[in-house]
Every structure is written in C-alpha cells, then in structure tokens.
Length: 379
Image 1 (cartoon, rainbow, N blue to C red):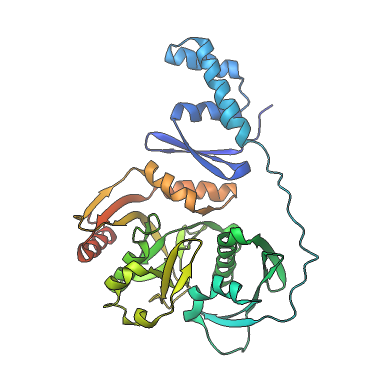
Image 2 (cartoon, rainbow, N blue to C red):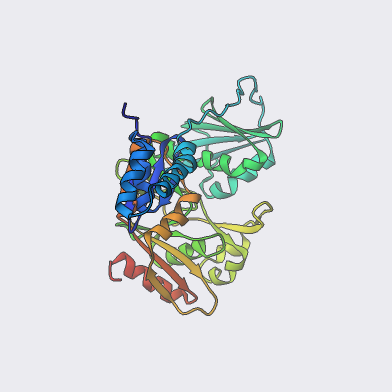
C-alpha cells in the first residue's frame, strides 16, 4: 500500500532540499540521498532501491544495501516519527486583578492596550514599541496581558490564553508577542503566514531587500544608514512574509542600535544621544532604539533579493552573488517557518526565485550605492 508522503523536495543548484512534515525541518541532501528518501517514502523496498542503485553506480549490492539502510535509519525513520510532546495545562492559573503597568500603542487605526504585571515583563516588550505609545484610552481594539507566575511568563490576548514560557525561553515569548501583533495589524491568522525571518527589510517603495547576518555584523546599522538616505525601514529583526502574496509585511518595532554604532549614526540621528539605553545581559549587548521612518504599517512589498551584510573595518567593498545553498543554510535556522505543508511548498518556491548576495564593506557611501544598484537590478 502506498504510504502518505510527509516530505517535500526542492532542487536547489546541485543539491535537494527536503522538508519533513512531522517536525517541520529542512535538510539539504545530495540528490542521490534525496532520491532514495523519496523511494522509501513511496514504500519501495530497501532491496529494490539498493539493486537499482548498484546497477546505476556499478558497485556491489551489499554496499548499496548498507547505504540505503543507513538512510532509512538515520533520516527516514527519525524524521517520520509523529510529534507527541505533552502540553502543560495552565487553565488553573488566574490572571492578576491589578497590573503595575499599562501601555497604549497606536498602530495604524488600531489601539492596543498592553498590561504588564511588573517592570521585568515591561522590559521584555516596551522598548521596541515605545515610539508608538499614546496616552489616549479611547476605543481599545485589543488587550494584551503579560504576567509572571511561578517564574513562567504568561501571555493572553483579548482574554484568550496564548502560552506560557519559562525565563530561559524569553525570546520565544517575544516572538509570539510579535506574531500576535502582526496577526491583528494585518488581519491574518498564523496559518496565513509563510514565515518570519530574523533580518532587516529595506524598501524603495516598490520592492524590498532582506539584510541578514550574524549579530554584530551590521544589519541594523546598515538599515539605519539606508533609512537616512531615502530608503524606508519596512521591518527590523522580525520580518513577516505572507503565504498568499509571498510579500514582506511591515512591522512597527524600532530599530535596535548597538553601542559601537553610535559614533557612525549620531550625525544622522542626533536624537540617539539622549535616548534610553537598555542592557540585555543574556545577549550581552547594550542597545538604544531608533524610530523607523515608516508610518504606513499596512504596507507590504515583494522581495527578490537576500543580502548577507558584514561591516569590516578598513575592508574594500566586495559584493558578490553567493550560493543559494549557503544562503538557505544561513537563513533557515534563525527563522520561524510555517509547519503547514502548502506554506512550506510556497516557501521553497519563493526561496528558489531569490537572488542571494554577500556584501562586505567599511565605506558607508559605497554600501549605499551598491544597495541602490541591487534595487535597480544593475548588478
């Protein structure tokens, strides 16, 4: 009997990317390995697969049998196990009657009321959204509640329980908070998003480019420099892409500026001089927040280019196209990607169509000129 396929396959350059439905995982495999996986998932026997492989490669059958058995044991069997993790039941946890802090954020025509039970929870959320704060309390569109109970961070939206995370999982809570925010801003459920990327999205009004790179490589600094040169910040650090249009949607968080970028940016943004400084000990970084120059948080634009950016002191500017496989392997581990099969297929198709670049620079003007060329398809 034919087995139901829990896999998707996408050829990328000279390799195959395989998506495993049961744990929403992507692997880059050699084409031969992916082909064996495909046959195993169709219910073809190990002996039949090994015989065809032995004939094709002119190697002894026992060698190909061992090879196929290893793939079945190490990839197929492990990735085909249903996820049966136990979920905690938090229904007996009561929301506090009083919250120490209440903030109101206006985004487009929506007013968000966010309640925090202590300064700790406020610190996890407020700095990124402080520029959206308003004093008015008229006609609240949505109420978010964040509170600590037994060292777990609890999160409710409009009285619905969303989740609870221990203090070591703070970034998961922050990601979920942002996810709930974009669902309300853009009127899309979680199932309607293809993915969210740890990147910076810069727009020229017609399309956008995603900037990626390890922390400290200069993503946000490059974004701030481009913003000061007639480009628009569409999103920083949390870049959502929808499934239906495959477009990047705006996200209203501020741009995080690290201490070592202040000297470069202060002439362009004197307001940074007196802005509050936040020390994130877990991430070992000190940041200030810069308001994005985007005031249309309805906007969404196509993306055709990924740029891995790196500031390197005294480096000559180098801009080169890089392997899509290399880009894929850097992009995916830091991303939230939809576990829905149709959305995973859309993501694979979208990624295959992208141009992938690496820019190393020390001269800001040269970097800005190069990004302008990418926008104009002149590279």
